[in-house]
Length: 334
Image (cartoon, rainbow, N blue to C red; front, side):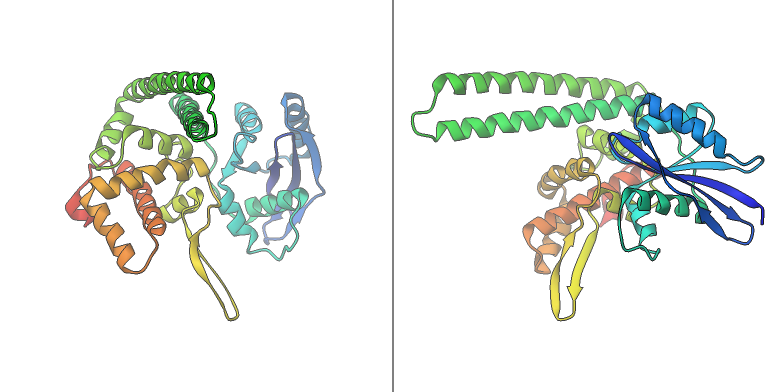
């Protein structure tokens, strides 16, 4: 039978990427070739593209499918898009769920490339659109903001340790305090840049103002969520969003063993962190979130589990308010 679709599945790491070429015929028969390895740099990308063109079948659409693995996929994805190629980028959790449907027990990079190829052949997936300049800049700023806050926290912890140690070094403590002052100044500068950037686009700012009506959710929280999800470009529903953040609940049971329900933490840690601290704030300042949190405790859940539940609720709230372009309605939330 004549092929009707060609997919090149690509498993990407920091230094290299592995690809496999597959085809599917009209009677749904699939064939996946052996793997090829390329360096994940400009030279390797061009070599790969030359190889891909050599594999292309005339009049048959060719798709390139890869996972959104950190920033490592970006060089290849942007290059392919600039060449007019059909590029598909899927969330890691979506690829993982598809992998579970296959009878594959081992896990290697060539096998992952095979799985991605099979996924592209069997599924109808939306093509990837590169993030806007606004979202690219926003992600750089929000990641810098997080890094500066982590450095400030580290310096504060070191001051605490030095202060409570035997014969604390006063000069060391003084320098650490100067570092904290510098970090705080840089944090404020980055926050001003984020505020200015978001107000530059009126449509984006109007949506953000709707979300800011929720007590406990500030501008930095919204900015980080938008940056980590590319304004929810790859998100199709709330369940997928919580899974991508690693805030989905999993249960471990086997035979007589009864494990506790926990969050998976298998997702974007930056996205997960962006709503955790605001959840603590929302419990104190938002009556609806406080009621929700108290209900969790009444059901016998630990306090941390209650905070995580509120964090998940805030994340979904940001998503739906952004999607529907409406302000927060506390009465509806209750």
